Length: 481
Ligand SMILES: NC(=O)C1=CN([C@@H]2O[C@H](COP(=O)(O)OP(=O)(O)OC[C@H]3O[C@@H](n4cnc5c(N)ncnc54)[C@H](OP(=O)(O)O)[C@@H]3O)[C@@H](O)[C@H]2O)[C@@H](O)CC1
Ligand SMILES: [K+]
Image (cartoon, rainbow, N blue to C red):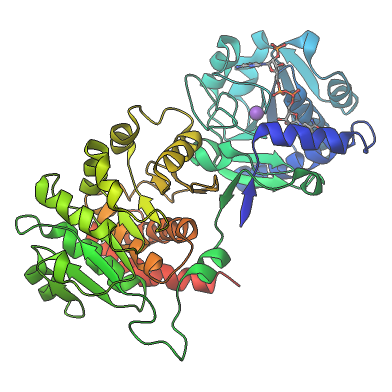
C-alpha cells in the first residue's frame, strides 16, 4: 500500500532528519532529483537538453530554494536558466548564489513575461508545503502567461497541500516532483499535479504510519477473492442484490451483473425486476422479495428501490440479517430521512455507505466541503460505517480512521449507472468476508480501472463497464507481482 502523509507529519519528520543531516544536504538531494526530471521533460518536449531554456518561478521559501539549486544543476548540462524572483529580498540566499555561480541569471517580475514567453519548460518554485490559499496576484499574473509545460516543485502552487482544494489562481503542472513522501494534494488533485515523481531524500524512516493510503495492484490482488480447490459457489460468498423496480430495472441489471462479473461467488437477486435480471443474467437466482431470497453473505441494497415505505421495509429487513450491507443510492436517502431504520442493524455487522456530495449532505446536514478526507472520516464515525465519498477522487474512510484515496483515470466514470456497477462490486467482495474498508477501496479501484478500459479515451456506458470488469481484474493480477 502506498502511504501518504499530511504536511504536518512531513514537517515533523523533516525536522528530525534535518537535525542529523549536514546543512543544505536535504535541499540539494531534492534539487538534484528535480533537475533530473526537468532535464527529462526538456528531452521529451524538445528532443534535447543542452541549449534549451528553463524559467524558474521563485517564491520566498525553501520551495524557491529547491528551484534555484535545480537551476544550478541544469546549468551544468548546458541549459539556459533564468530565475524570476517574486520577492528578490527573500529569495533563498544559498540557492540564488549557487545559480549565479553556475552562470544562471536572476530577474525581477518586470522581466518575467518576456522570459516566460521563450521558455521550453517552466519550473514552479513559488510555494510548497508551508503555503495555503490561491496564488497572490503577482505570481498569478505570471502563471497565466505560461504556455510551456510546467514542472511543479513539491506541489502545484495555489493548490492546498493537505486537501487538494483549489480556490482561485493556481498552477496546473505537467509533472510534479515531490520529496520524501507523497502528500495528500498528489492523490486528491491529480488533475493539477500531472505525473507525480517521488524523489527519495531519506525521509521514510522518520515518517511513521501514513495518514492516507492508496491501494497498489498487489493489495487489490491480495484482497480480491480467488477460488481455491476446496471452494464451491457458496463458500466464496453469496451476494444478495436488492435493487431496481419493475419500471426501472436498469439498476438491478447493472448491480447484479457487476457482482456476477466480479467474483466467482453466487449472486441472488430480490425485487421487482427479477424477470429482467434473470433474462440478462441466467446464472442469478432471482426472486420477487427479500423475505424469500435465501441465505447471502452480504447484501447490496438501494439503487432504484425508491425512497417510500416499501424501500424502507426492504432496507430494514436487510439490515437485520446480520451480514455486511452496502447501502447505496435510495438506501442512503432512506437512512438520511429516517435514521431509525438503522436500529435494525446488528452493531457488529459492517455497513458501507457510498454517498455522492448531495447524498452526503442529506446524511450529515452539510456539504462535504473542501476537506473531503475529514468529511468522509466524520461520516464514517457518525454512522459507524465505511464511507465511500464519491467525486473525481474517491475517498474511502473506515470508522477507525483509516482512509484510502482512489485517483481516477480520466472522467469517463461519470456516466449513468456507473454507481450501480460500483455497488455490485463492493457487495461481491464484502460477501467473500474481506475487511469492509479494504473491500470497498479495492472495489473502487477496480471500478475506475474498468471504466478506463471500457472507455479507452471515448465515452462509455455502464453496461460496457460491467463487461470490462474481468479485463480490469486480469490487468491488476498481471501487474501485482
Ligand atoms: N524542510 C526541508 O528540509 C526541506 C524542504 N523542502 C522544500 O521546502 C518547501 C517548504 O518550504 P518552506 O517551509 O520554506 O515554505 P514554502 O512553501 O516554500 O513557502 C512559504 C512562504 O511563501 C509565502 N506564501 C505563503 N502563501 C503564499 C501564497 N498563497 N502565494 C505566494 N506566496 C505565499 C510566504 O512567505 P512571504 O512571501 O509571506 O514572506 C511563506 O512563508 C517544501 O515544499 C519543499 O519544496 C525540500 O527542499 C526538502 C527539504
Ligand atoms: K511549487
